[in-house]
Length: 265
Image 1 (cartoon, rainbow, N blue to C red):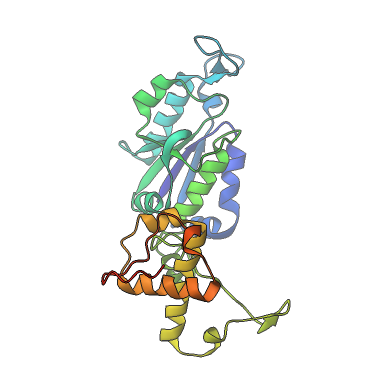
Image 2 (cartoon, helix red, strand yellow):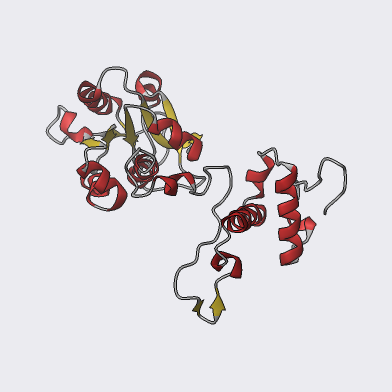
């Protein structure tokens, strides 16, 4: 996979290639990273990349011309037709489904803007989609670009030491991940759940799925509302509620009703 990034601070973005999963993937030639600075595509002495907004208002707006030139330069290296994504609070939410979609591409470009944003004419001319990593504002798109790169690269075959690690990640099945425990048996006065030491893989898998469902119910009920739960999953959720003393009204909008209309909450 070839990834291009447009950024005024290329050193920041390039640092993602120096560590962890992304660094190993690049070292192993599973991915490559090309970063271009729009300043290198300006034509004036001051290397100007921003200007005042039409209509007035605070801040500055990134100019279309140097960004367009930088995008074209990256596309020349990665291939014509490479999709370009602008990281913006106004973009579509970037989630695990989007990460999976990008991981199937041979190449893509991320535009990391700053200031008040970019000239809208660049978006209309050169941006295929706008992406947002959350409902908050950053000083620039570099952190967002690094988050996207990390989320996508770790999905590439061979990027992780264990292929099952990615398959069991949070959101891969639409749920948050189950709790994890390591050695020793007792830490901070708390013991590892007995089922995890039982050696019964079927019971362990059931317990983990129950915990993933319960954790999603209490922390991200919006994810469950997007799922069609099976009868078994509803039973697991009911068990979780009973075991934890969770009240039904703490998770509005999530029905635990099974097909025989037996109301479990």
